[in-house]
Length: 433
Image (cartoon, rainbow, N blue to C red):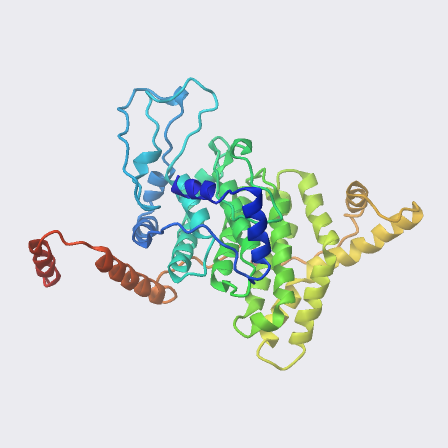
């Protein structure tokens, strides 16, 4: 609610917008973002509950019932005071039976929806250290949720649809989505939307590699569940495929700069294996056969990016350097994608020549794809639907140690002692062993 208010404050007139546009020409990589206070302590408490108590997922998933499902009225919820974002009690989203209008469009909510909305705000700006920690913690929580069987069952339940208004980073090349046009969908669609949004909006000089890896891992774990349980999710998969291809393009375009700081081949391998997951098992979880055709269409349409990636990793894998081994893994992972490109491109060119067409339409390309599946040979790749489960020990110990220290310092800084006795009492508590 506070975030929306601040968004409206930033919506200005034509003259102001023109001034900002001209001014921004002289500021590189410094788009102004709406600053909203985060609360790492609340996030940490939520993480502990989700990570250590698998039954807590039921609390996150407990929806405020629709009118037709209500059996008895509940007392109205008192108005909660304005607090920093993330500290409003969960009850603030509850709609009492007395307040529910007689409207079939009344939507339900739950704590998980509130968390997804919060994450969409926090993860917009990761340049500040506190926001980076908060964004990382949000992704760790989503990782725990994506590994939980019950949580996945709830996220993918086609009978439990919600309208989730995620906050999107303002970008000049896209329009602001209208809230009223949001469809009701299973919650996993909102999680995927959040991951796609992060992928698209954080390709920058200060590349948050760790957050990208976690983001791709979450998508992979959700796909593993869909493949395992044969869940055919009606989702705009093209948006995910497009975001992943653009990410690969970004990694290649900034190879020199990024390689000085990161092993980009780990991330590239994860992205390529997501495509391999769709290629190998897509017929078990994509909603329709045409969705599988569209996957091939996107790979063929964007084949230049995959060709460039192959050239880059082949160059580095044939040189005796530190990137030889990770680059060769990407080379081997590209085998099926290259097989698809090398198989269908000549067929498409032949079809265009025979029919005297200079530029084929999407439908014509799809027709060529459908009629040439039988002669395509793909290699079976093992381990695509397996992943390493999240473990807090060792890998995350340093992060949580630093996070707790940061929270403690922040609490001490903002704590106001009304009386000396309270301060003395706290000191006494601190000496208890």
